[in-house]
Image 1: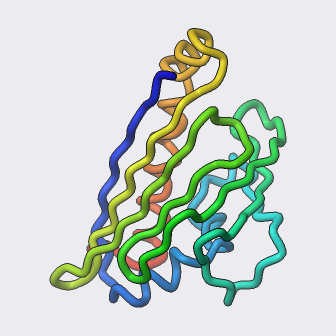
Image 2 (image 1 turned 90 degrees about the vertical axis):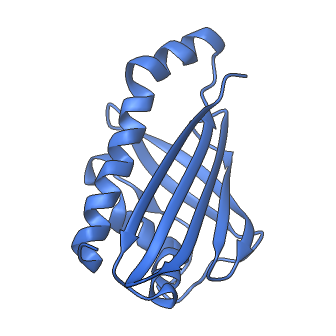
Length: 155
């Protein structure tokens, strides 16, 4: 299985507690995802729901040509105010492991994402990744950087 890894870092001018409060709420994910993805959390959570180990989150997403897909992730690890990990249980990827790390720095928080993923369908999946999936994944994270800057300000 061929895997791909992306790393992103962003400095945010807020407290560690405020960053954790925002990013540990599953419903806030739609606020930092491009509208073109038609991303909707379908799990029955409220704004006050905070993630925990074993939490299952379900979504509807349209990653390609407006085609709606079901996606399910599990929060596998949570170390409060430090990091959490989500892994796909069902969805468009063969493998999805996403680490979200938070570190207090002078004047704010350094948020680090490490995403490791694989595409199904062998060589066809590898070709699809090189043609569009890696580009689209990068665009999603680039959008997220801008959205977080708009919500919290630029560091």
